Length: 205
Image (tube, rainbow, N blue to C red; front, top):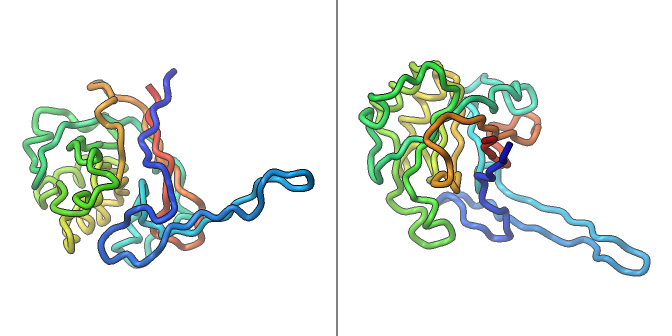
């Protein structure tokens, strides 16, 4: 079995969604020495880097990460080539989604990670595509861009959240995935009452 990492590396001052004021900071508290060892701490926002959004992000009263079942973040997935700009239902119409738990959208946007253009005019799901995926019995939707909605939008988030789906955003290496289904996993930290968390997203091939 081969494991493919689909996550961006967490670094100090890594880019974040426009308007997110949280700072990612990794601090070395001690270093290797005669009477010491390396220890570190970190702080970051829950929506920075490769992360998941639970339905709680947009729906009050939904479970937080400490009570959300881990199985909801694991399942059979397939990657779909998708255009830049609005992603419509035509991406999925030739495929039976009933055997899948996750749909991953490969737009190529992750190549812009770390550049000034990454958080500008990224690909996003239109409402019809979001409705189609919400009704397909999935556990979640992932993509290699910042959000399932355009900047300032929330329609796709709300549609998917109402159906109980999670979003996995800022994925990478989707171009290395096969066309056939595979096992996908994006386990979050068990944060009390939180609606999102960085993840180490992987594909098991």
